[in-house]
Amino acid sequence: MILDLDIGNTLSKWRLKDADSSEIRSRGAVWTREEWKPGSDIPDLDVVEAVRISSVARQAVLEQTVTLLQSRVRSVYVARSVPEALGVVNGYEEPHRLGVDRWMGVLAGYQLAGGCCAVDCGSAITIDFVLPGGRHLGGYILPGLRLMKESLQLGTRNVAIDPDSEAEELLLPGRRTVEAVNHGIYLAAVSAVNRIYAEVCDREGIALPLLLTGGDARVVARGVHSPHAIWPDMVYGGLEACFPLTAAERAGRMSGAPRVPAPAGLEKIRAGLAFSMLL
Image 1 (cartoon, rainbow, N blue to C red):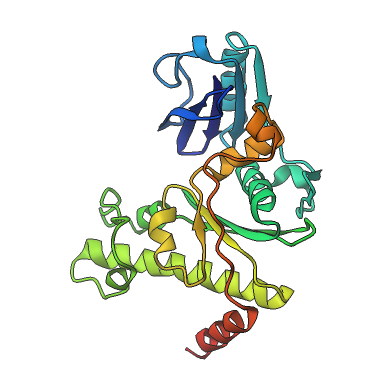
Image 2: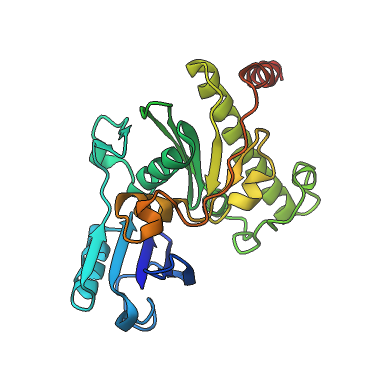
């Protein structure tokens, strides 16, 4: 078995993948904490042959996790943000400072779709762009839905937006405080994604495929105007591309990769952008 870990600032997600068939056997998530305990925080390591890690948690958390795993597992691979990989040139002036989860998403998106816009809707919403040919432009970071809600300190943090809510409902004025908060942060988030995507496509003169991942991807996607695909395993896809361990991975197949819809035409994107600037 292969254990893939996506260690975030808030949640640590994991999945077990069959090394022979490339099938996903199980998955889960736990709160990122100071100490990881075998058997409770992560799956049974007795069946794990290799581990691949993407981590944006504190260095101490990563080091503790790697030490634990190296004592039990034969091979441990840790992803790093580097100046260039898999045909993509990192757009950061200091490449190692780009969040490795963002780097994994960019690499996975590029392997799947070529140039693309990769949006991760987690504790923060990150939006990264890579052009055909592999030039990463850099990106944007804004507070995620949960962080925006917590910042208001109105006692609504534990009432989440239903991911099955229709976008039209979430754009209406709230008639209770919790609705007013949820609808306000939803509009702020989707407006930012829509505007940033349109602005960059207009400036670069290209309509890019749009990919979304992260815990709030489903609800944010409902308000995204452009054709898009949701890829829950996009960070894992980057790990697979960087450290291919199965026959399917070596052939370039990433687990759970979605069908990527053709983007809207550039003229349509520009028309929508022009209209939004008039409002």
